[in-house]
Length: 213
Ligand SMILES: C[S@@+](CC[C@H](N)C(=O)[O-])C[C@H]1O[C@@H](n2cnc3c(N)ncnc32)[C@H](O)[C@@H]1O
Image (cartoon, rainbow, N blue to C red; front, side):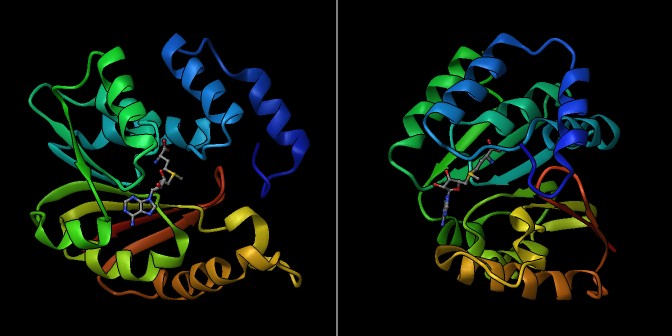
């Protein structure tokens, strides 16, 4: 459930949702039970739409978790296109791999195991779409690294830019203070960065969409 959107609107939108793919439904329940954060379904729907419009050949995701969004993106890709995704957690990696096989999409997905901050510098510079969804404390560093990894016209998507609404709260829980500070600092930069045409969408937990100029 989104914390930045009125609960009544969230309930209303949930009530309109069509039939959910059984594997996606299973992954959503699993993530909820185990308290593993995955993308909100509406944001994932929106990213699927972008994949259909943009028809990317190369996609990168930073922060795989159990592979929910990876699979949703991979399903929308054109023949010959692929997605790379990076995950650090030893618990999540086998779960993601298992889900890629269950979805029958393991051929389209390359999972890099390890710390994204050390992996990204060695990746190519021609991604069409990059989706950033890892630890918020590192968002500034990721933004700087990833800006160079997109082709001109490519899209950088960044989740959680409204960070559960903490960006407008006076009182922020102690364990969210550092991440909130970084997200707020990044938000100030994003809309003024002349390398991109950017917007922060009030969907899910706030999705940054930065198109490289
Ligand atoms: C919000 S979850 C990703 C959810 C996923 N994108 C989805 O929508 O299904 C964030 C993930 O980033 C991973 N992560 C955090 N820091 C990382 C790092 N430095 N390198 C790679 N993965 C990292 C975490 O282990 C966690 O699984």
